[in-house]
Amino acid sequence: MVTVEQWTGVEAVLLQSVMRMSVRGFAERLGISPRTVTKWRKQGASLVCVPEMQQILDTALATCSPEARTAFFTRLAALNGTGSLPQAHQHPGMPAGAPGQPFQVVSHKFLPAYVGGPLSAAWQQARPVPEGPARLERRALTVAHPTAKVATLYAYACGVALLHLEQHQQPASITDLAVWRYRTYLDDRAWTGQLLTRILGTALPDERPAPAPGYVLSVYELGAHPWNASILPTAMQLLVTPSVLVDRRDPANIRGLAPDVEAHLFATSWEHPDAVEFSGAVSMGLAGWSGIAYHPLPTEQALTVMEIVDLELDVQTLWALSAHIQALLESGQDPVMPQGYGRPYLAATYSRLTQSGPIETVQHRLMRKAILATSELPERLKAAQDVLLP
Image 1 (cartoon, one colour):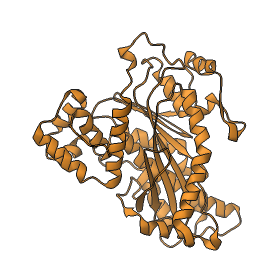
Image 2: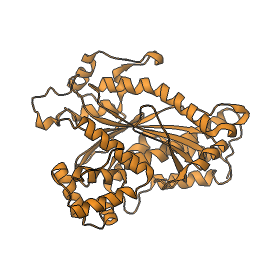
Image 3: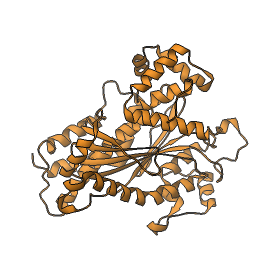
Image 4: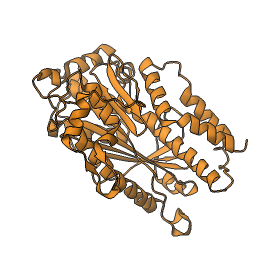
C-alpha cells in the first residue's frame, strides 16, 4: 500500500477528487479556508503542507470510504510510478497528434446488467454507499480485477448490477487506445458475467449463469498530452468516437487502421456530427453515444471526473432497467415490475435527472444535458413508463 510520506498540493487535490467534493465542501470538511484549497491547486507539488495540515489530511484520508481510499492510493501510485508527461505548450516544437507521442488517460468503464431478484445475494454482501444524482438506492462491493486499478460492483435496489472499472493507460496514439478499448470489451463483459455468477451462486434460478452486460460505456479523463490548443478539440472528438480509427468487422480480431488515417483526421479537424460539447473556460468535455471524453484544467471551478462518473452510474443503471422492460415487451411478456419499481419510480427518476438542481453549476447542467441527450435515456424512460401499468 502506498503511503503519503509528505502532503503537497498534488496529494491534497487528489484527495479532494476521490472524495468527490467541491472546493468549498472540501474546505469545510477539513475546517480550513477555501483559499487554502485553491492554493494547493495552483502550486501543486511546489507547496509542502505544514505539519498541522499534514495531520489534518492524514485524518481526512483515514476517515474516507474504503473505495475512496483505494482510489486515492492507486492514483497516487500511478502518479509516482509514471510521472507526468509534458504539456504541449511547454514544448511547442513537438509534432502535434503524431502517432508515437504518448498521452495519459484514465479510463472508466461501465458494465450494467439487469439481474432482478437474485441480486439480493450481492446486496447482502455489499456495503451501503451514498446515492447518486437520480437518488437510486445502491450498495457497493470492491472486487479484484486483473487489470483495473479500482473495480467496484454496484448493486442497485431496482435489480441492476453495474461493474465500474478504473484503468490507467498511456497509449502511443489514439488509435492504440481505440484498439485496446474494443479488444477488452468482449473480455470485460464475459468477466463481469462470471463475477456475477460467482457472487450470486445458488440465488440464480436453475443454476443458469448470471446475465452478462450487453454493452460497455467508457468515460475518458485526458491528462497530460502532446496536442496544442488548435488540435486538442480534434483529439477529444477522436477519443469520444474511436470507431473511426479501427476495423471492427471481425470482433475477435480488432485492428487499428493505418497511422495516416489518424493523421488525416487531425489534419482535417474531423468532427462527429452527433457529439455534444459541454466545454467551458475551465474544462473541455464531449459526450457521444459510446462514451465521454473530458479534460479539466487545474482550477477549482472545473468539474471533477468523479461527478461525471456519479451521473453515469445512475444513467447506465436506468438504461439497463429500461432495456429490460423493453425486452419483456418485445418477447411478448407482460412488462410488470416488482412493487415500488414501476411507473411512479421511473417518473421520479426521470424528473430528478432532467430538472436542474437549486445549486447546480452551469458546467454541471451542461454536462448532464449532454450525457442525457447522447444516451437517449429520457426517451427510453418515457417509453418504459408508457408500457407499465399505473
